Image (cartoon, rainbow over all chains, first blue to last red; front, top):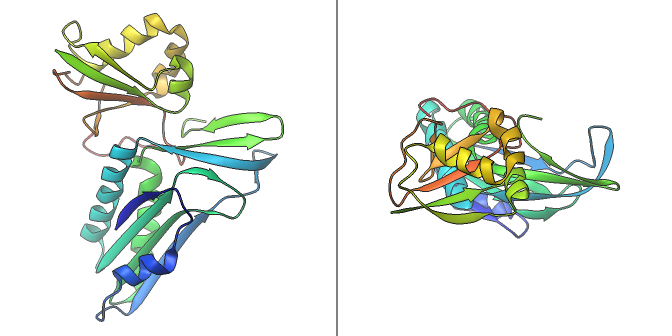
Length: 136
Length: 88
């Protein structure tokens, strides 16, 4: 399951959709919004995507994870729009028969997502706003 | 003979345009499309060094050829840092 969503992420629904009776482990990664960055207080932030390509690249991340690790299923949800402190911006769930590949695939998936999925965030401070881009 | 050109994030702020259509015939490659917009919006030039581009949802290079009907997207590196993916 790969989705870009504008409502709060339902982690339990994602997990329920992925896990099968053969699984012995579920690894979950949640990225959440920090209240500070670059020495400034972040009031909130907004995520934007090149949606058609981002969805395709989320599927690519999942395909690479399945190819590289002995896992049975992976799902990735990414929020778009305005998020506040502690909101979950991205959730990755990996199910597998054993825990090792689940942990490893989860780490691989978030690291790869941050390199190849065209999603950008803008941080809003008391005195302005800044696009956060990989080159910054 | 037309192409669809998309700008995202800070690049869309510079152009004030997220999406536009263009006659494709004068443009052999992605780079020539971008330079056409730099003439119109000179501030875009500052983004040249870190520019990412895609053709029809696939990562592309400045010298990737442009074809009629293509969707060409220009965007900055993504939020978490950027490596050009293998094969792009």
